[in-house]
Image (cartoon, rainbow, N blue to C red; front, side, top):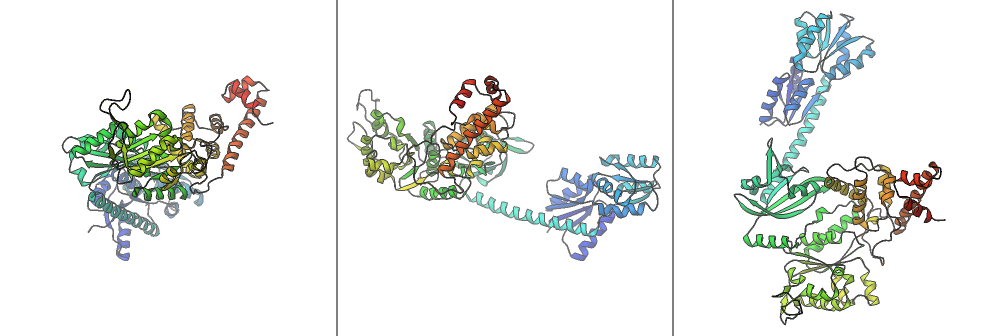
Length: 640
């Protein structure tokens, strides 16, 4: 069995020292001599035998690193190595030449003032120039040389007195310890990769693991057995497989989920799902899952995709940081396993549909349709026919042959009733009956259609209060309020704000075609303290506006202030009294004070600029980048 560590000694002296260490300490490492390019060939042979970490010194280390992918530990050259050599050399001559690559020269420069000696440095930049440099030393009349062993050997052949570099034994022992540590890390990584490979090979789906640039890192047997998958998905350059340009690559680069069908040339069709891998607002790539598609699966997937009845998001897509959101997502995962009705509450822009789609994709109904309905967007006179369908001739203008309602379209899947608090009372009665009976009757029909559908409702209103005051049916409220999730407002999410800012900045930067502008600490602080009445939706809009306006330069506090609207009230005016737990969540009062502090900072900036411009409002507006009308309005509305 090959050792995990391989030592390549550039000179005979170093070779003998490592041999002595191996004999005395029974250390297990391969040992060979090799200098410069010859050492690279030795290294390749070692790696082929299973060596995981290499050890060498100086320029030889650099050459091996440039050619070999395994870790290479460099034996450091320190001032303690060169001081004894220089001290011995000055006993023979006052003129001492130092020949070597960067580390020797650097150490000798430090040693010179310590020893109060003048040195002349001949720094090497390539191995080919060593003979010429040694000849140059001879021509300049030097008789004593300190340097790397090969240079000293050539100097001694020309009659000069040489003192070759000699590394101290403790340094070699420390280097071997570092190599052992790296070898252990490599062993653990290999064990983890082996377990991971066994796991993905045991799944029924094809698995492709990609980095954040869409390059293939790992795949399982199902994919490897079908060369058509590789040909369909990847382009190959320098033995690197990268996703072809298209929707799938865009999804990976943006850290977004994707569902669709791919047509492998030899192995048939596959249902394809892309799951982003992200943490802390950083995109680490994606996992692609491929499932061999039966004809009926393909027809259903195509039909759902064409009608937009596919849930794109998963719990893994939710950017969060902190115990509060982690606990909420853990609860949602438990709810996904059940089939009970769920009520999601939260202000507008908090991500209620994102949670609803994630619930669907984590449930047993994930292959069924996901039908999203905005109850406030359906006209009251059309709501019944849209939700429950109609038969031919049910009313003037009815489609020939009738039409399925949204509940029927959601059969075997999930229907998401967003803004259910806006549904008219007359429709609430009919919805309650459908939920109770689990069957629906189309308009103009006498036949009941059985339903197998999971219902998720969402609202930004206080349904309990509305039910008490008669604005929402109590019986329907109790029927939909089985499992409940309350999403915290963005201002209550603490450290989530920083994660979301980083995530959206990267996503927007990619869409705009480059790296996003840097956000200065003062700009970040301003964004942290804004109350975000529109929550995540508003944050994304603010960041996109800032990115476009400040492209190519750092974003400062003034840029943020110009793009915030501190006078807005929070959405969902009645409020949601119950809130999910959050870490370091500021109270609503602190959110209000944050908006106030922004207004105060804005006014301070205006007055400061106005004073600098001698009261000239036109010049003040120009410097601030706002219109004179906006400036007049800000001054008019300031507190007295």
